[in-house]
Length: 160
Image (cartoon, rainbow, N blue to C red; front, side):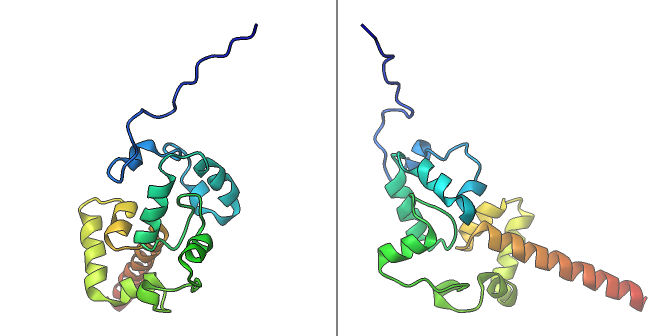
């Protein structure tokens, strides 16, 4: 007679709720690039499939209008389809066709908020959440600001 090892639950047995879903994620500890890279979406979706927090993760992506990555087992196009909307490529906040990174650079209050949060030591992910965007957008804005600062410094050196 063959005996099988008893099933050991992967997560604690507490109920998954809106306040604790992060503790139950299958993706915890996995490479975040798998969930951001369109070429790896099949891998990400396989990780999401058995996740007990999948519904809460999906709701988070919908609530925050996250335009990139796999959340709750769905990519951005699938989330839009679920909501019955067509996805606008390279859209900014509120359907604005201007990309979000350009909006942040153009709107002084948003740019200053980003710089203030960065100065406080906030991570790009945390800043992205505060500005209702994604990490890629924050990193692009920071690169643009660094490039502009380098150009300004070079111009001042030439003028001196």
